[in-house]
Length: 216
Image (tube, rainbow, N blue to C red; front, side, top):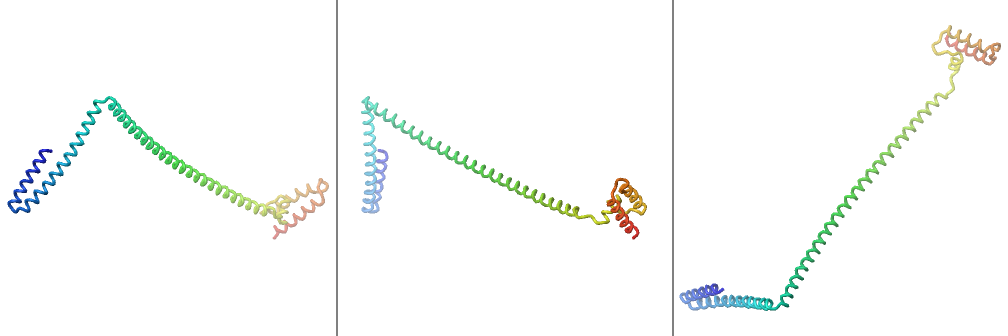
């Protein structure tokens, strides 16, 4: 500090000398400016020195007083404990905040998984419902086709078909086939052989009908 003051003083004297060389007014202004800076620096140095002396005296008093040392140690420990408590509190808050964020993320993932599962179940239900409707439609078409076929089969046979069935013949028979079938059936349908007049009459009618068809 002393060296700095001496340097400022030398600088002020040099500027003052230059001022006297170039003019009295400029030299005085420069000297006054430097003097103000020196005074300010001296004031700051005095303030620092006073504070340092005060601290030194206080420390010296404390070092000579066991109770003061104990109070200072207690204050130091209390301060350290307060700092540790504050650190623990902030650490606990940070940890709780991290846990809360982790729980929120886990809940969000669980909710998304539940929504995806619900979507899959809904899609599976829709597919099952579509398959059930398709099967019902297939069954309805099958029943409709079966009903149409049954309707065709239930139509009464024509007299020609009845005559063929009665004599046991098929389409494309010959006159000889017709005669043999008629003789065989008429013997069994004769009243003397256990038949009936109605059966014999039906055979005769069938024979005549088929005979006309073959003659045509």
